[in-house]
Image (cartoon, rainbow, N blue to C red):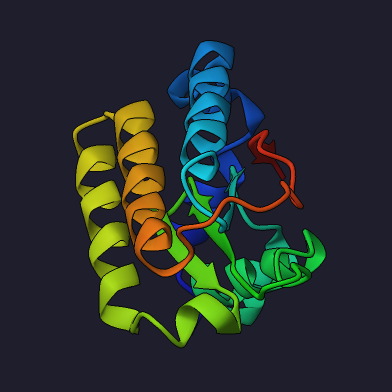
Length: 164
């Protein structure tokens, strides 16, 4: 069933909305947090934010989870030597966070750990604390990475956040 309210939200949410909630200063802080986190472990973290889905995806009923899996593939987060890439994906129009982890790290943590981080980030977003929520999410993912991939390896993925 087509959700007209969701479609409208996506149609009115554009790149300016990303700039409003994550201005360049916040994006630099997010990049710094990813770099700092990865200096303490061997995992790879990517953060991507997408303002909204296109109309075709909305009409198909594409979920944030389905889109996050597509982005995980497009950004080649799965293509790390130790299968330890993690994507934190924010679909801004829905204020929905999804974490997609490569099979190496996912096998060591269950969905519950990722879901907890997502819900905590979404709670911060409901309070309009976007930068704080993203940084807390990166740190939480990094904490899990430190336990499971304690040795620093080469930086295989860009640390800079991406706006889709």
